[in-house]
Amino acid sequence: MSASILILNNIKLPINASIQEAFSVSIKRLKKYSAYPANPVFRIYRKSVDARRRGNIFFVYSVAVEGEFPQISKSALADMDATFDSAVMPVPHHGSDELSSRPIVVGSGPCGLFAALLLAERGYMPIILERGGSVRERISAIDDFRKTRKLNVNTNIQFGAGGAGTFSDGKLVTRTNDALTSYVLKRFVEFGAPEDILYQAKPHIGTDILCVVVEKMIERITALGGEIRYHTRFIGNKLTHGKIQKVSTSEGDIDTGAVILALGHSARDTYCELMTSGVCIEAKNFSVGMRIEHLCADIDRAMYGDFAGHSALGHGEYNLSYNTKQRGVYTFCMCPGGEVVTATSEDGGVVVNGMSQRSRNGVNSNSAVVCSVFKEDYGATPEAAIEFQRKIERAAFSAAGENYSAPIILLSDFMEDKLTREPSKIIPTYMGGEGVKIASPYDYLPSFVCDSIKNAIPEFNKKISCFADGEAVLTGAETRTSAPIRIIRDNTSRLALGFDNLYPAGEGAGYAGGISSAAIDGVKTAIALIERYKPLKND
Image 1 (cartoon, helix red, strand yellow):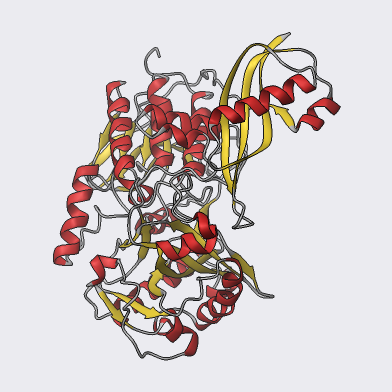
Image 2 (cartoon, rainbow, N blue to C red; image 1 turned 180 degrees about the vertical axis):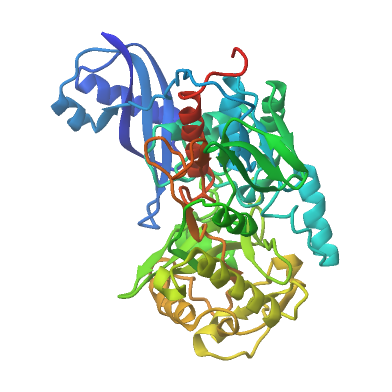
């Protein structure tokens, strides 16, 4: 016998069942196949909702059993619907190269924070460069922008401690099965996130709690000899004999031995500066569209029927997609009980995103409804990709009165190509409902985007029966679903092409799409640096 973790899958129970009942089913299944271990420890590994039949909703559990198992045949594992857990956090071994100076991490989003955290814990004393302010400064700047409409272009919903994800929903869903996912979730819990993110199928932290988590992570990094320099914008690299030995910043030059670029998807000025310095950047596909708001109660009823409002279920969450012959339309970043927020980071542009607190107790639910944009739609260059997004944002700014109000339209008017009514049933949440103006999406979005979304709405309504409610509100423009570019790197070394010590990483470099995947990429990039270089102090 050897100690292992066995995952028992597809344990379906009524929503009123207790977790102990899931353990009881696991015990029966193990004993049936003579697989009961010595010294077992049971815990919930995954929990999801099966609401495909609204009259009969279940929770579906996976249970992790840790213990000393007897030999179990492959056929028995298949019959039990079980697998042994092979997810192990890699333990990097220090390399032998000397760092000439402290490593620099550019950006303090999830990628940058997780990279810096691991480096700090292993003795590398990283310096984080953050163009924006601290979490508290961000909260103040965002509140001030709502009141005065005066934008701080460096400290806002996109820029500052924690990155863009801090002021969203704190969703931790990732479409990858990477072994580091559980590591990232456990680290979040360590710094104050709720423990249920470890097993929920759609885990979320909430903006209110994520702000605290980010602060605690930064405190840990600095306590270990790391450093974060706020209000310090990365400008470029200075090479000597093919290596970066200094970086230029808004606060002067800083010596470094290696650089991790964890920029985030909105650092457009930095992208342009990197291109002029020889960094290989390519354009890529992305998506643009709008936010759609429904009443949270309507979404719950559409998804859960008579079970809507059940305390065990929480609010309904959806993820919809529809593919035309030319391109795809899908929902993204769904925020139950949330609000639509202003997410611009440039003067003269309007950008929207979704945000919700841990409680998700708002009246409305919202999500992005976006259409894929291909390279041939805008000219296939990085500069053209950035300009494509920027043009939409400026047009949205103009359509709504050039005061950072957002353009809105009722779904019925959008579908019928008219502008007839103000919202009444569903009150827009953008800037409290007072920072909006009726305008046609055709005034700021390409016609192919609007037409594609129109075609998708009836298809989405087949899955969520209230989706095509004519009273639903569309708010634009959603343009920052992902970075429009990719910084090309070597797949093995993770180094930028042509550079000896520059490591592009995360969502802004084009290698992630959300908090969890960005954090994972940050961890992997930090491991690559650790396995190459000696630490600056004993860890």
